[in-house]
Length: 121
Figure 1 (tube, rainbow, N blue to C red):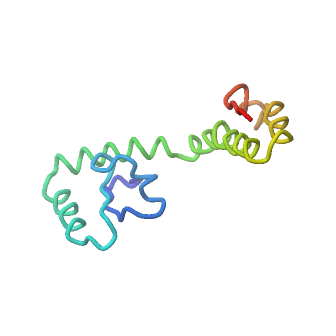
Figure 2 (cartoon, one colour; figure 1 turned 90 degrees about the vertical axis):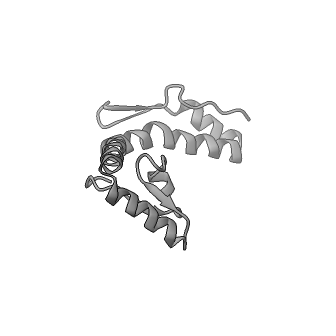
């Protein structure tokens, strides 16, 4: 995707998390379904407009997934979700941690916390 080449990939593992708009940012086929894979590749090879549309959509999607954006998402959302989940599973002691969790990272470039997470125990 980042190379500007439309991707045709098996619908397994973490791939569907990357090609999360099948038919728009790439194509997914079921494991072992070689006929579907061949149809998708042929469609891309034989339809310049389709190739260009998927290429542009994939490049846009890749920019959303670049290191800077992925790191920001990790720091501002996933960490908070992990702590909130632990609080819900492990009880009140973790909930106190969540209530006080408001951390600055990288000299104030990224703020984490600040009401992003609500936990009901």
